[in-house]
Structures are given as structure tokens and as C-alpha cells.
Length: 261
Image 1 (spheres, rainbow, N blue to C red):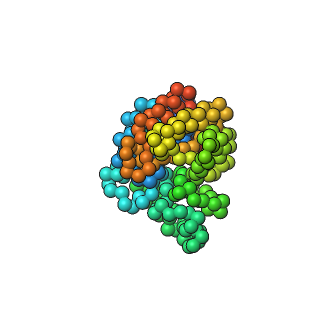
Image 2 (cartoon, rainbow, N blue to C red; image 1 turned 45 degrees about the horizontal axis):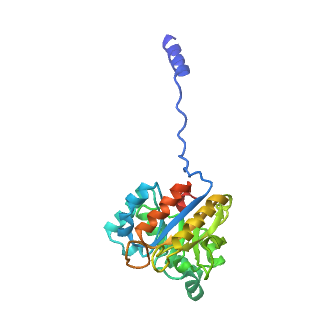
Image 3 (cartoon, one colour; image 1 turned 120 degrees about the vertical axis):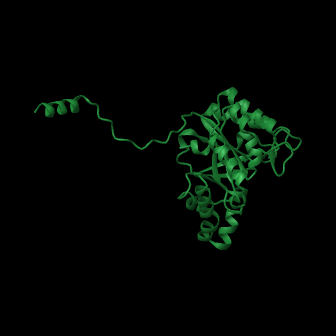
């Protein structure tokens, strides 16, 4: 009887551990932001900028195509980027324009040949692509609907007309409370900002960032390589630092696509 009472007493006073709960996905809380993205597969150059991103507590999204051609060292580089807090997204298998492909071979073939294998390879390598960037910004509402069954967000693109200010590109801005309902977010290109090719671009970028901060919006930009001279389309590290420094100065968070609702 004594042992029974002892056991009962022990049961009553011993706290019972709560059932383990599935960890919730932690999202950043933000009232505005800049979403910087880089396309293609310039992994070696991207990795070199990890200290620069860390300096400004900045995180960006890298959209990768031709994943099947990457060497083990490049895949390891993408993992370094992911471990540093950056997001890895899909840029299709072969960087083919979606509208052209769907128009000639159909939606089913596009999904089977350009989307599904990209997601599969990225996932098997340890990445979880929540977003997709259209090669050459080629997309349609029909393709958006099809791809949003696989991805949370897509990225299209638009450019400036002569004399147009970047802050007047209405489609590159999204109010924070509308992000979750807007599947395809539109960005604009910032390669060559601050060079002779685009001498006023950095000023325009900063002005657009100020605009987003003031209005409670996110603004989306895209570039490719991060280097002084290429190869390919590129944003110079000094220009990238100027953008990151301005974001920090005005209190504009740098967000990845994984941070978006």
C-alpha cells in the first residue's frame, strides 16, 4: 500500500513533459523591404561576397539554372550560401523562355522537362526551392497559375523606358500586406549599376528603396554575376555594397524569397 501511495504521490508532483510539437517556420517580421536576387550559376563569384553580405546583415536569393552541370565544389558553394542565410531558388533546367517553350511543346512538356527536374535536383542536393525566376522574364498568366502549384512565389521582370524613373515602375513594388496573395512578383534589372553603361542607376535604385520604405512596400531587383568585369551580366561589388549600405542606413530589411509570406 505504501509503495502504491508513493507512486501516486510521485505521479502527482512530477511535471509531465508536453507532447513534442512540430517546429513552426519562423518568418521575418517586416514593414517594408528590398528583395535582391541573382540569376544563373555564378556560384564562385557569389560565394566570394558572403563576407560583404554578412557585413550588412543582408540576405538575398540565388536562382540557379543548369544545376546538372555544376561541379561538386559549386554545389558545396551553394550550401555555403544557404548556410549563410541566403535562399536558393529554381531558374529552370536549361534557361529556356517559358512562353516560347509552352507555345511550341505545351505546358505538360514544360513542366516535365524544365520545372520538375530542376526542383528534384535541387531538393535532392539539400535545397528547398520555394520560388522560381523566369528566364528572360518570359511568362504568362497561364504559366504563372501552373507554376504556383509548385512554388510559393515567382519572379518576372520589367525594364525602364527612356526618361522613366525607377520609382515609377509600379509593378516592382508590392505592399507588404499583399505579398501573400501576389504569386508573381516583378523585379527590374540592376546589372552595370554605377558604371558607364548605367551611370545614374545607383541613384535610381536608392530612390526606389526610399520609396518602398516610405510606402510600406517591398521592391524587387535582379542581377546576375557579382564581379568587377564579368563574365556575363554583372553587378560590381562596390555597387552592391553601396546598395546594402543604403538599405542599412534607412532601415530597409534585405529579404529573401523564403522570408516572404
